[in-house]
Image (cartoon, rainbow, N blue to C red; front, side, top):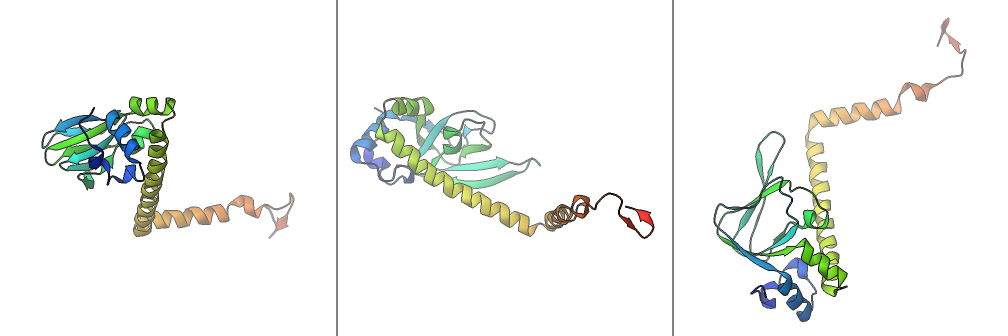
Length: 187
C-alpha cells in the first residue's frame, strides 16, 4: 500500500467521479516520493512517464524557451496533478518541475497504468476519460494563448497578410490560354 488514503484523493480533478473502491484501487497503485525544497522532480528533456499528484507542498513548472529564458507556466499545490501529456503520449518533458517547498508526491508509473488496462480495470478507463477532458481544456487554453500572441505581434500579422495575399494572387490564379497577346507582347 502506498500509505495514501482515498480521502486524500477525493478532491483531485483527475479522479472526479471515482467510486470509493476505485479510489482505493488507484491509491494502491501509487508510489509515494518526497522531495526537498529546490529539488527538481522533472527536468526538461527527461523521459519519465508517470503521473504526479501533489499531496503536500508546492512546485513551479517552468519552460525554457528557445532564447534560453525561463518562463513560469504554473505554480501547483496539494491535490493538483502534472505529467499527464507525457504520460499518455511518450515524449521528453519540455518543462522543469521544481519544488518551491518540500513536497510529498504520489506517483503513478505508466507501467502500473498499463497493468490496470490489461486487467480491464474501470480505474484505467475512468482515469483516461478524465484525462482526455482535462487535456482538451489545456489544448483549448494553449490555442487561445497562441491566437493572442499572434494577434499581438505586428510582424507576424504582416507576414500572415503577405502570405494570404500571395496565395490569393499567385500567378497560377491568372493563368491564361497559351498565345494570349496583349499590349503587343506574348504573356
